[in-house]
Amino acid sequence: MNDKTEYFVQLLNDHNTSLNEMIDFIYSSTKKYNIIRIVKNGKLRVIYNANEDLKKFQKIILLFLQEFPVHNVAHGWVKDRSTVTATSPHCRKKFVGKIDISDFYPSISFRMLSIYFLRWGIHKDIVFPLCKCLTARNCLAQGYLTSSIMANLLFYTTDHRIASLCKKNKVEYTRYGDDLIFSSHYDLSSIINLSQKIINQNGFKINDDKTMITKENESQTALNHTLNKKINVLRKNRKVLRALCNNCLNDGLEKHIPLGEDADKFISKIKGRLNYYSSVNPETTRSSINKFDEAVRLYRMNKDL
Image (cartoon, rainbow, N blue to C red; front, top):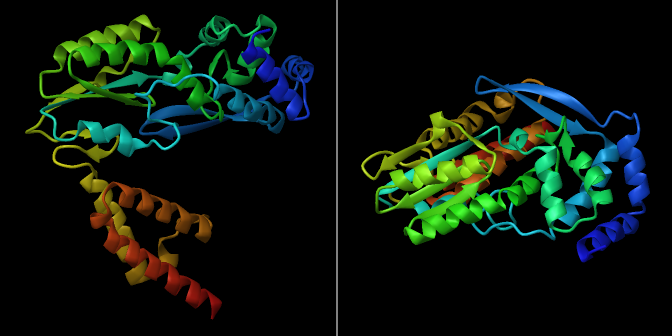
């Protein structure tokens, strides 16, 4: 066994389980996940919710996956990186291009995962149960806690080829999940076309409706950020959040908590959004933060009366 194989076996042992237990679980008739179907932006999304036994093994696998390299152009699900770091290199450029991968997770098959681990020298007796824990219906599962990092690992070769192409042509390239972003002071048409070929050659499909190039005199956006002069959250999103904070202060926060939602959960969600917007542009968010904090203070004061 190579070092990575031995490390995985040791990880299992360190977490009071074993490879044999993992294999027994995989072959058992136990239902491994529940399926949740939601509609987002008019499109049906299937979410797989792993059961507790499967999650136990996935948490161990997640530690194991940290031993594999993620390309430096990847910003999604990478420590100390975010949509801000993914979009910052593309500010104030004459041309900004975007490519969107269609059905990113379902495109990554059980076979692709198996080949990936075998190429790293992982023992074949481990590869099968490992890939079974990572997939549902023979592809990477939306909703599994391992899917995001696994997608980054599988896309490494594609990232490397595109990054090399861009470096030769003085083009900035970053990726956040299934969103690929390019920018340059020169026309991007040929780079976008060649990148699309690389993506297809590596087994992925492109969402043509979301693939585009915008010029500096147009609105250049990526990952819900504007890029023309300085990075900022899209104006329409800032406007909606600003209005919510104003209304919470003026009408009372309790009137704006969605029916059936816990108040603390709602407060945490809005504060998270405010903190994120503030990390992008503190100046445009400061007033909304102050108003929402005051609305929360008044809500809790009235609740305690």
